[in-house]
Amino acid sequence: MLTPILAYLLSVLLLCRIAFSQYSSDQCSWKGSGLTHEGHSRDVEQVYLRCSQGSLHWLYPTGAVIVNLRPNTLSPAAARLSVCIKPSRDSHGANIYLDRAGKLRLLLREQDQAQGKVTCFSIQEGSLFIEAIPHRDISKRITSFQYELVTERTGAGAGALAGVEPQALSAPCQPCSDAEVLLAVCTSDFVGRGTIQGVEQEAEQLSVTVAISRLYRQKTQVFVSGGVRVRRWTGRVRMPRQCGVRPGPGKGDGDFLFTGSVRFGEAWMGCAPRYKDFLRLYQEAEQSGTNPCHVDTD
Image (cartoon, rainbow, N blue to C red; front, top):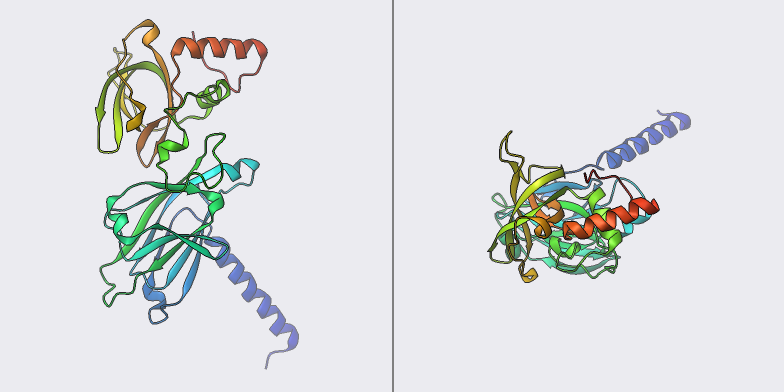
């Protein structure tokens, strides 16, 4: 028979184990199976994901899963984060809702997920509530998506981004302010000076072919080098269809400073001022000491 002290110590160890189990669920990706609570179709599982990007794979969905997406660091900027999710084209078996204080709003129906379309919403709008659709045969059903946390452009209100495309977060059709341009040079996934060589219209966006004469930074292989002897890079950057971009001249005033982000493996245009305008702005900020970072403009 356990003594009261030993029983107390065992209960503390059990609580610590539970706490550790909950803490260990703070990860980038989650993979689970509805078979773990098959027969208890009303079970709801809590999942905590605390990375800037990751994925979810729910095999044989039954019951529901609540996905809490949060940044891994706390800061005032976290309130301006948005979540973008991209379902797999073979994702089915569940509907996806936004859950805010127990109130559900439909985000993606099961049939919508087959399009593989990116959907974004403000992180303040709540958690994801993924509810399995009852089926007799769940053996061939998998609900899966990728997610990324992105920063809303200044001025976008909470709740204004529900269901929007990721490129709308940076509003590339709208000219950036001086402060936004300088910040974009420091924080974008890619930065380069170049020209627009061609524009192709796709279903819901434009595919812009860009030639880069000077590449300042790229986080992933957006632009491909023309070779050791040719200091030139080319790549494709996406923009919303309504932007109405046209190819420009290849020299002098036709140069732009291209900045942007990479979302789910695709490059999206951000701030893209004329290079001469950026140079003037940058030099003024250098003189006043207000530049957020240094760029070699020589």
